[in-house]
Amino acid sequence: MVDYMVGDRDSLFKPECDVLETENYYYVFIDLPGVNASAIDVSYRDSKLEIKGEKVRDISGSDFIYQRAERTFGSFRIVFDWLLSDVDENNIDATYKDGVLFLKIRRKKEK
View 1 (tube, rainbow, N blue to C red):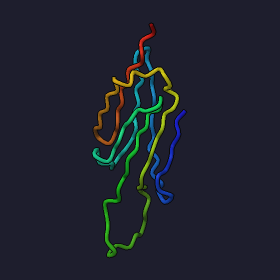
View 2 (tube, rainbow, N blue to C red):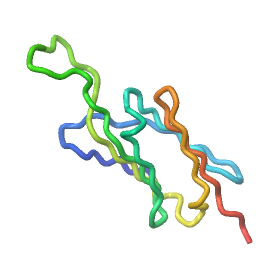
View 3 (cartoon, rainbow, N blue to C red):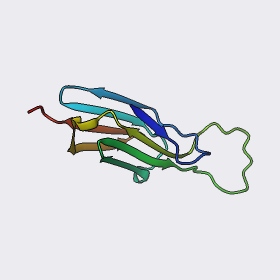
């Protein structure tokens, strides 16, 4: 299950994601266009993978009057709780390139 939680009531930013799996890995792709890499936090605790961050509005000041505003901004938090005990928590790799966060998550080997 994927749970999206918005950290700011005015935030409309809801990243889209794909999750794939093989026998040995989970692969997670999350679209985060316009999000600075330093604003992204990935953690795994209590059998839950959590990705959170913020997309900051890049234009500020009171001199502007919007004629049209379609882009979304704000904080986000995504929790994957379907992973349970199947994840090797010491083997989660994250890469961020061209606005896409890519996670490669090793599955525990059966004993």
